[in-house]
Image (cartoon, rainbow, N blue to C red; front, top):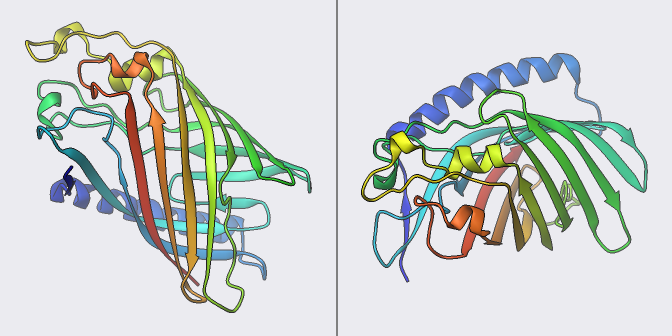
Length: 273
C-alpha cells in the first residue's frame, strides 16, 4: 500500500496568506481581551492534516493522503483558549465539569480543481460554527459532549460530538522532556444539511462518473489516540491518528470512497513564549 502526500502550492499560499491576517487580528484581539498572566501561555506553530481523505482518490490502488499545512496561534488561559480550529471560553469551570462556549471551524470542503472527482462541481467552503461543550472530568478519562450549529450560512446544519479520553489541553513543561499519550473514542452526528453539503452531488453536477446524490443525517464513530511531546520549555509536538467507520449516508455518495473505513491523521509543531 502506497501513501501519497500531496501539497497544493497555490492553495497552501492562500491558506498562509489568509491565516496570517487571522493570526494578526487574533493576536491584537486577545492581547486586549486576555492580558497574559502568570498561568497563561501564548504559542505559534504549524499544523498538517489529511483534510480530504474521505473522498475518492485520483490514483488507483493507492491510499492518497492529501496534506494541508497552515500556521496557527495558540492561547491557554484560565478560562479562554484558542487553538488552530477553535476558540472557547469556560462559562462554568468546576473541578468535576466545565461548560465552554465555543466557536470553531473545521478543515474540510474542496474546490473543483482539488481532485478529478470534483471537476465541474461547485466549491464547498469551510463553515464557522458556534455552540457549547460540556467536559466531565472523571477518574478514568475526560468525557466531552459538544453541540454546534453553522453561523456562517454555509451549510446551515448542526453537529453533535461525543468523545471519551484524549489528552485535553496537554501537559505544561515540567523541567524535562515528556510524552503524554491517550486513547480517544467517540462519535460525531451530522445533520442532513452538513452531509449533503460536503458529500452530496446536485443534479446539475452529475455526470457519467458522478451520480447525483442527496445526503442524509449520519453518525460516524471513531477510535484512535492523541499524543503530545514536550521537547523543550518552548517546543511541543502534537499528533493524532483516528480510525473512522463511515456510515452508508457518506460512503454511498458517488464522490466518496467505496470503503467503509477512513483514517484521519494530524501533526502540529508549536513554539510557546
